[in-house]
Image 1 (tube, rainbow, N blue to C red):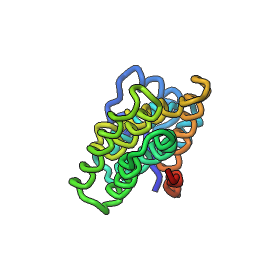
Image 2: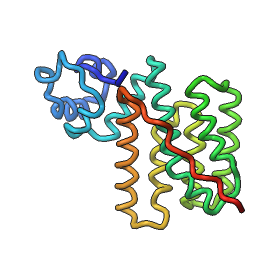
Image 3: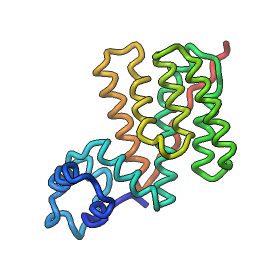
Image 4: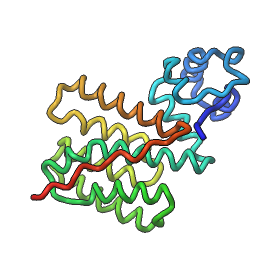
Length: 204
């Protein structure tokens, strides 16, 4: 299934009034939208931002286990996309293991204790990486991807920050933002994508 909501269903999530007026206007308002279900791809095409769609998905995930699973897998994809930045300069396998654990937990293959252990190890790796480096941000993204759902928004922020490594700042941010937006749309669509591949392990 894909995530698609009516006007009344989104309004019931209690968005802030200013953002709700903006998003509602983009999607045709109550008269033009209500009665129709609008999916993530349609909302994006109408001008909704990644922040808008993440907020809606997080709100729905509080009561919808399938959307919760999809968001966790999206976070793991965001972290996997920048893992190579960490592994260029650091040797711990904790961030890689955290992404693997995040995916396994989302699919019900490991329990909460195993998820928490992977998260703790990745946090340690992030703290041990060079201060404020792209490698640290990459490890941070991996750690948050397997942590509690309270960290959903910070995962993609950390992944975007990691993507700035060795690139022109604004171009790198825009590219990372676009890729993550594309991936979110895919994760919330009818045909889910394969997991974003982890980089090959380099022999040191």
